[in-house]
Every structure is written in C-alpha cells, then in structure tokens.
Length: 296
Image (tube, rainbow, N blue to C red):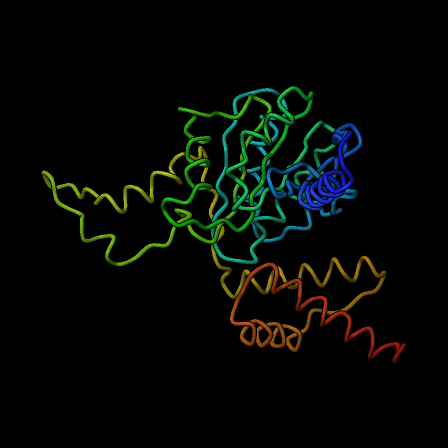
C-alpha cells in the first residue's frame, strides 16, 4: 500500500492538473445552435455555442447594396452546394463588414448556414476547428473579424495554407470569411516599394510587396467597403431616422436642421459611415421624442 505522504502528494498533483485543464465541454448541437465561438484553453480549445444570434436583417444595412449582393450571392451558391469562394471584406471601419456576416446568418440559418467565429490569434487551430464540423450536414462559415497580421505569425501561415489548399484545405462544407481594415491584411510601409523594378516596361513588385499580396490574393473574392461621401452618409442617416420612427410608430420630418446636425455629428466623430449614421439617428430620434413627450 502507498504511504499517506505519497497519496497526499498525488492528490495535490491531481488538484493542480484540474485547475490547468479545461472543463469538459459538450458537443455543439448544430440543429439548435446556429453560431459558436472557438475558445482557446491552456492546451487546446473547444467550440462554445452562442445561445442567441443577433436579429439583424440585410435590409438594416444601408448604403452597401453592391457589397451585400456580392457576398449574399456567394453565400447562396455555397448553401446550394455549388462552387463558392472564400471572401475578404476589407475597408473603412463602421461600414458594415462584420454586420453583413451576422445578417447572412440570421437570414440563412434556416437553410443550414452556421457561423464559427475565431479570433485572429486562434486561426492556427483551423485544422482542429474544421475537424469538429466536417462531417456535419450544415454549411459553415469560419469568420474572423478585424484581422491584421505581421509576416511570419503562425496564424498568418495557417490561414495562407488553408486558403491555398496546398497543405491543408478546409472541407467542402466550410468557407472562410475575414474582415480587415487592410486590403492585404498586413501593414504596408514606404520601404516595401524599394525593391520594385522595371522589366521590359512593366513594374515588378519587390519581395516585400509580393509577400503581402500573396495572402490576400488567395481569397477568391475581395469586397471593398469605402468611406461614405457626405451625400451618402446623409441619405443613410435619413433612412435610419425613418426606420427608427417606423419602429416607434411615430413620424418625424427630416429637416434642414436635422441634416445640419447630422453633418456636425460626423465632423465631431471624424468619420462618415453607416455606424456613425445609425448613432446619429438614434440620438436625434431619441431627443426629438423626449422633447415631445417630456422626461420619463
């Protein structure tokens, strides 16, 4: 029999191990769960279900009709079992890149669409993530939001390999959608252009630029989200005012004063985007209704 001192020592070891190891996680029931997050633990990770998905409609995303059409058509082809592309949604913050992916899920979850959100640093676990779902009868978008890399990062290499399909390729029921403020997902410096050269009248990029283009170029679709013009911003703000008023069952006139306030709001924020337009509309409608009805 083991002496008491050894037994106590083994108990301490087991207690320490229990504190380090992740708690057992039940398999995700994809019939009832439409979205999950990949959570990294001490030695691995697991899929954790998102209990409810945001009820955002495609019609709620204003000023980006072309982008919506391109991304939804690709997603519908994917759901139908037809060839479809991985997508890089890039551009100005607040223009609806990540909201578009959430709206697609809300719209098409009943058709079998599912979304797995993965932090940029956890993309190294892509093989483990897709192994969890490759035999499922659903279509999965692995979604990574606000991605930016430095060359050489492990997650950068894994994503590049997955998109290229040369070493590791996701199964047919998985696509990768990534959002970024950077077109090439990597910082770009003036010094990158020093290696460029002219060959028979054509510009050939240097190695630094080629490396940066090589990752984004592996996405089948680039969908660009550009800053709003002032007219576009004002139109989106006006539409949001109408939507919020309809929701509340009231009518508010879009006046010259409202337009001027919307311009001032964007100037103070230093940005013109769908997000800023919604923020202004929420503030303006709320204040107008408060002045009509008095303090609550």
